[in-house]
Length: 533
Image 1 (cartoon, one colour):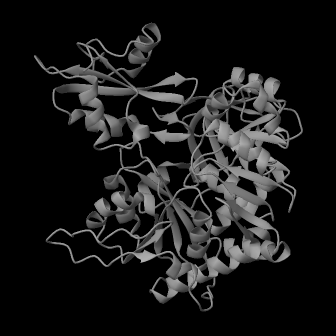
Image 2 (tube, rainbow, N blue to C red; image 1 turned 90 degrees about the vertical axis):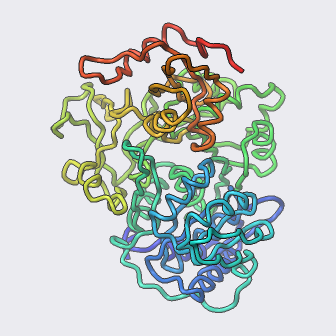
Image 3 (cartoon, rainbow, N blue to C red; image 1 turned 45 degrees about the horizontal axis):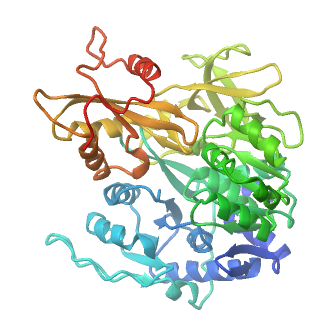
C-alpha cells in the first residue's frame, strides 16, 4: 500500500506499533506512549459509534493545546467522521455559524470554553451532544422557547474510558474527508477547506522528508494553536506519524517556553514571527536553555530578515522559513534544511508539490516576474464545503490559486511580495477587512469605514480601521473597540482607529485603500484625531 493510499488512522497505527512504548505526548505532568494514544483514541471512536456517529459525519473540536486535542482528533477520525477544528479566538456566534454550516453532529470542547458553549448551543440546535474535556461539564443552558430541550453534556471520561472495539471503517483516502478547516472568505462568509485523508497523508510524507525528521528521535514543542493548519501538520501529525514526541503548551510565554525546551530536551521548535520577536527579549542567561534545539521553523506570516538574523546570531540556532495555505494541507515550501537558505524567501517546494507563478489569465511568467503563486499536488484540497462556485474560482485547471503574489528566482526559491486580496495576517491567522468593516458599519455614529493591514514587528501585521463619523457624532475609540468585541474575535479587532473627515474615493465612489496605506505610512503612530475616552 502506498503511503498516499492509506488513511490517517492506518498511518498512525503503523507507526504506533513500531514505537508503542515510546513517549507520544507529554502534557501537564502526564505522559502517554503511542500504545496509550492508540488505545484511548480507539475508545473515543467506539463511544462515538455507539452514539450514532457514522462515516462522514462532522464533529467540532474546540480545545486548547493539550493531550486531549490529538486524542479527540484521532478518535473522531477512527470513527470515520470529519474533524472541524474551531479557532479559539472566535466569538460564540462565529463558532455557531461554522458548526451549522458544517452540519456538525457533535462538539468536543474544553471546559474553559463552557461559557461560550452555553451561549452558542441554542444557536446550533442540530448538535446531538457535546463532550466536555478537561473540566466538569457545564450546566445545561436554558434553550430558546422555539428550540427543543438540549441534552446535558457528556464528561470526557465516558469517552476516554469507554469499553468496546473501535468501529471498522473502510476508507477511500482520495475521496473521504478527514477535516474541514474554515478560513475567512473575501465576502465575509467563512469557507471550509475540505481536506481528504490523501491530502493530509501526502503532506505529512512530504513535510517529514523536507524537515529531515528522524523517526523516534525528535521532540516537538507545540505552542502554535493546534486548530491552525500549520500547527496541526507541523506539531501534531509530524511527531505522531514518526514515532516522535509532542509537548503541548496551552499558552505562549517566552520564559516558560525556554524552560520547557530545556526540561523536555526539545529538538524542534515551530513558531510564527511574533514568537521569535518575543524570545529575543529574554535575558542572556536564558540562552543556554535552547541548547538541545536542532533548528527552528517559521511560518504563517513573513519573518522580518532582521529578526531572523538577530535570533540566529544570539541563540546560535537556524530558522528555516516556509509557507503554505490551509487549502494545501498546508505545507507547500520551506528553505532546505541543512542546505542553502535565502533570507526573505519561503524556500522551495517540498517533495511531491509543484509551485509556479502565473499572470491573471493563468499563464506562466518568467522567473523574477511578479504573479500569483499557484500550487499543484496530492496535498491540494478537494474544494470548499458546499461552495462549488468559489471552488471553481480558486483553481486554474488543477492548479490551486493561493491568492499570494510572489516571484520565483532562477534557483527555484519563492518569495511572497503581496496579497492578491486585501487579506491581513496577524500572528499567522488570516483576517479579511470586509468582516470588520461590516461590524463597524453597524456601530453607532459611523458613516463609513475601511480596514487595511499595517506592518507590525511583533504580529506580522495589525488591522487598522479608518472611519468617518456622521455629522455631530461623538464616538470614542473605546466605544468602537467595544462594538467590535461584541461581534468579532479578539484577533480581528482593529489595533488602531484613525478618524478622517472623508475617506478617499475614486471616480466610481470606491474607497481607495492604497491611499489609506499611504496615509498610514505618513502618520504612523497616530491613533485618532479625536480624544479617547
